[in-house]
Picture 1 (tube, rainbow, N blue to C red):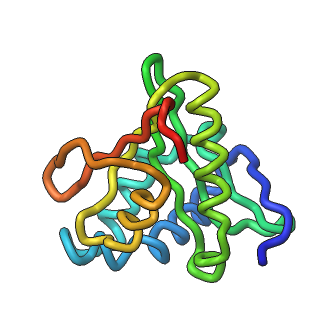
Picture 2 (picture 1 turned 90 degrees about the horizontal axis):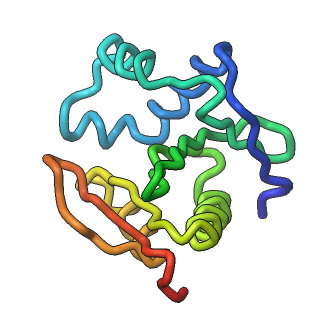
Amino acid sequence: MPGEIGLRPTTAPDSDFCFRVHRAALGEYVAAIWGWDDETQRRYHDRAFAPGTWQVITVDDTDAGLLAVEYRPTEIWLGRIELDPRYQGQGIGGRLLRWLIDVAAERKQPLVLEVLEVNPRALAFYLRHGFRETGRRGRKILLVRNPEQED
């Protein structure tokens, strides 16, 4: 069972850690669709990485993953929730997702995200937490959890 789960804002030096976690957590799925090219993926990462906006997930003060959430005017967008494989399957992602579901309910906004269609484990995870498919964009499945939904 995981210990204390925390979040801290990323800083510029966290970029390498976040890239390594992304490669470890989602690399096989990215590779299955587009192929994994480290240089190309690093360029995508460098454009997307947002120090101070993204957060590092910590477990007992050890960096374990990353969380990227945008609080938009009409919705909360879960851009990334990625854990180093050593921390997966321990309930950490579920605890963070339930917290975001509560935040969305307090704000009376839907929580939205997309998942790669080749990642059935992630899709099942979100469906278990009350998300519903609302559409597809290329190889991505769009999911939403409305604030009035019951668990």
